[in-house]
Each structure stands twice: as structure tokens, then as C-alpha cells.
Length: 515
Image (cartoon, rainbow, N blue to C red; front, side):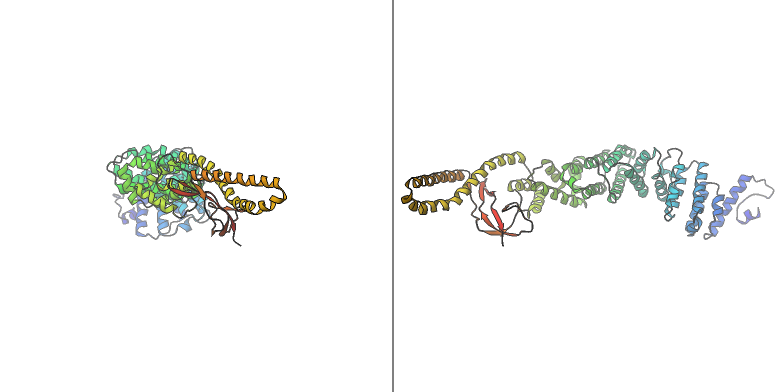
């Protein structure tokens, strides 16, 4: 009693009867008072073993950590003893989340021995716990989330999605729960779709400003997680990402700060950018960019326009879009869906067409018709136009080939007429008559082919014997394409066609590497 009085604890007269429980509480209060007076006092394992509840145990561990004595306290098998004590006290308590927070905190300082702790995670929860938001601070929530992420109970997956959306500002806890669920899901697309199914909880947040700030925090967590993740993208990740975007912004935009929405959208675009990094082949499909087209519809023209002006991530997505468009153009493809994505990614049609033209400028190997379609921002059914043009070109190519043969044979026929016929005449008059008829037939045929070529606006390119830089798309290499060849000379002329005021090479000239 004297000790209690010295500590300044009012206990009444010494004759008062004090129950055993009251004495225990008073002694605990005394111990707490002494700890405050002696912050450097070392916590022994015996103190841990004598703790009577989780809060007392948590206070002792906090004291050990503050005094930098925690490593001494949990060395060797002592860690097992401390973990066992947490589980023992948890069975006598109804605060499993606090127990999980204590274990998570221990794991953070265990220095490579986290497995000892996480193996016992399932022993903490006999059933699904209450909301993680009931814990007192962000650190406790984060530590508890770490332990929950190692649980294998059936409720863990749904609980993690639900709490990731319910958490207000404990971003580390949110990331822990979402990252654990991404590891559980077979693909990124499944993860995004599952999260979308739980976004209805956002309707519970009545203040629109608070709701959109939470969406921004959620999107930032997704960006952080996916930025370090490698795995299977799954089926239609772009569509699933767009679905998530629509679901988080489906509960009203009136009164929301445009800067908050812009930051949230930018974080979602980081997920899109990561998909492109992991598998660029998917960047060739407009479905991957669904968030851009749907984003403009969901946010509205005004809000979307302000977002395009302030976005920091969109420039990288635009670069991928332009490069994907160039790849499609090199394959002689028109894609109206990809063009719709490009329109959504730029503030105006002029800005878009200027960007495409600049990106295509150095690609001299593009089909002029295809390049023009892309650089003008689409318009019309380019694919049908190109198909019809190709049919006409197929006929014209044959005429062009005949024109080349006629022009190449011209010199031979003239030598035959002027040089061979006079010599052959006295030797064999009958054969001379046959050769002369052949020369005449050739001249008539050549006249018809030249006339037909003029009608089809075909003419020889006049490149024979010219020396130039090799371009695989514009030249046919004699003997087949060879890599490493830069300079060539023309051994067989090409044929040009003028169409709609523009001249293009219809029949490629045949070239040979320069010696």
C-alpha cells in the first residue's frame, strides 16, 4: 500500500478492503507510471509472459521498440514465445484485429524470420473480423492488413476487396490487401473485374469530395501495385480497367474537384501503361484503350477536356498509340476503332492529325493511300476504298509488266529489222518474210500496249541504271532481299501510275547491290 501511495495513486485508508482484481489494476497502473518515469527500462521476456491482455502486451512491445531492445527481446526462440503469447491472449479477447496488428508489427522487425509469424496468421481469426477501420491508426491498420494477407481462410478475398474500398486514408493497409488479392487472382483482368464488383460501397460515402478523394487514393494504390507486378494480363484487361473506371465514377461527378479526378484518372492510365509495357502486342488492339473512349463519355466533354490539359501520364499513352498506328499502317491496315481512340486521346482533331503526321514523317515505306488516311484522321471506309484500288492495281500491274517487256524488247527488235533482215534476205527469202511479219506484229502489239498504258496513266519510271539508297518496300532485289545492303543500282525499270493527282510506283524497279 505504501508503494501505491508513493506513486501518487489514491487507494483510501489502509483499513479499506481492496479486492484482488482492484489490486492488480492498481499495480498495473503503478507499472505504467514507473515506465513513464523510466522510458529506458528494458522489457524482459518474463514481462511479456506475465501480460494479462493484448493492450498491455502491445504497450510492452512498444516500450521495447522505443528503447531499441526489441531484437534482444525476440532473439532466437524468444520470438516463438512472444507469438505464442499473442495467440494465447487473443483467445481470451474479442479483438482479433489488434492481435493481428501486434503480429504484423513483430513481423516488421523480425529480420528475415517473418515466416514464423505469418505461419500462425490463420490462428488469429476464428471468423471474419470487423472492419479494419476500427483500429486506432494507419500503422496498426497496415500491420493487421499484412497478417490478413497471409490468411488462407475463405473469407479473406472478399474481406480484402471490401476493406480496400472502406479504408479512408490508411494507404499502406489498402495496398497490402489489394496486392495480396492480385496474387490470389489468376490474372490482372480478373483482379480489376473483382474490384469493380465491390465499388458499390463507395455509395456509402455521402460527401462527394470525400468519395472522389478515396477513389484517387484507390487508383494510386492500383498504380503502385501494378507498377511492380509481373504476371498474366488475362482476357481483355483494357475493358476491365475501363469497367472499373466507370464504376468508381458512376455515383455522381457534380461538385467534384477536376484536379482530384485528373489525378485518379492518371493513376488508372498508369495501369494501362503497365499493360503496354508487359505485352506491346496488345497495344495494337483498340480494346486495350477502352478507358480513353469511355472516359470521355463518363466524364463529359468539359471535364475530359480539362483532364487532357493537365494529365501527366497521357503523353506516354499517346506515344504508344501513335506507334501502334504506325505499325498498323505499315501492314496496310485501316482501323476506325483505333482512330476513335486517337480522337479521344487528343484535345482536337487538328492536334491529333498533326501528331500523326509528325510521327509518320520519317516512314517513307508507307503506302501513300494508307498514310494519307491516317494522317487525315480517317474518314470514309478506307478499307473498302483500298480493296477496290488493289483490284484495279492488280490489272494495272499486269499492263505495266507488259509495258516494261515491250520497252525492253524495243532495241532488240530494231536491231533485228535493220541488221538481220538485210543479211537474211538473199540467203533465205521465206524465213526473211516470217521474221519481217514478226517485227510488224511486235510494232502493232507495242502500239496497243502503249496506248492502253496511257489510258491507265501508266509510264516507265525512267530509273534504269540509276544509283540510289536501297528501300525494301520500294525496290525488288535481284536474287531476293539481302540485309546490310545500302546502295544499289537499277537493272530493270519500274512503272509509275498517276492516280487522283498523285504518282506512285506500281511495279517496283529491280535493283542490284553496287560492287
